[in-house]
Image (tube, rainbow, N blue to C red):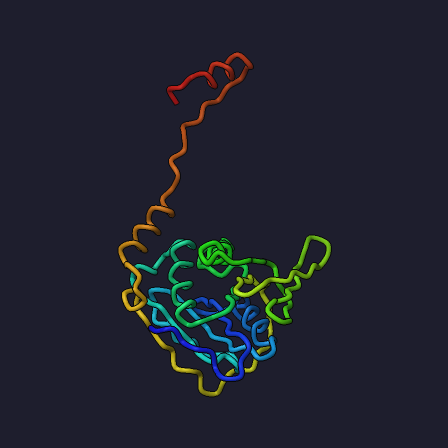
Length: 223
């Protein structure tokens, strides 16, 4: 997969990360991206399944899927590495995702993408517009809405939305790539997911009923 140029006349290219069955998180991110002027919007998915969405919103220019058995249960860090590799090959200026975009619903994907890309990141976005080389994003706070200006490239995690998006009559053909085709070592992804997802071995617990017993337990290095 070589680097893909933007379409003529477009200001920026946005990749929207979607699940196997895009729900309100993915559709909310898609709606936000499609609302930007002169933006080319692409869907990108990574998983061990064959990605064949029932419908693709009108305005989504292309759909890319990365597949492989190593992506059956990837950790957010591994998933971010795979998605970011594809996004960079696609020549995208920004990544949109839902706030709970990964299968486990942990909300770590957006942050992992931003850390690995070394770009600004914002979560809880519900509106956006582009001005110059900055994306101005409205963010939900605890009691108010704040606007943040992010330079390109950037990662934006969007709040779920039940946007009634019109769908394309003929969805774009899904371009499917394997990890080796993207230059990604499959064994590294598998080992990374296994090591990060391994349960943490906890020290045994001990019940104490007095201050003296507590001090004795704290000084006991055998547990």
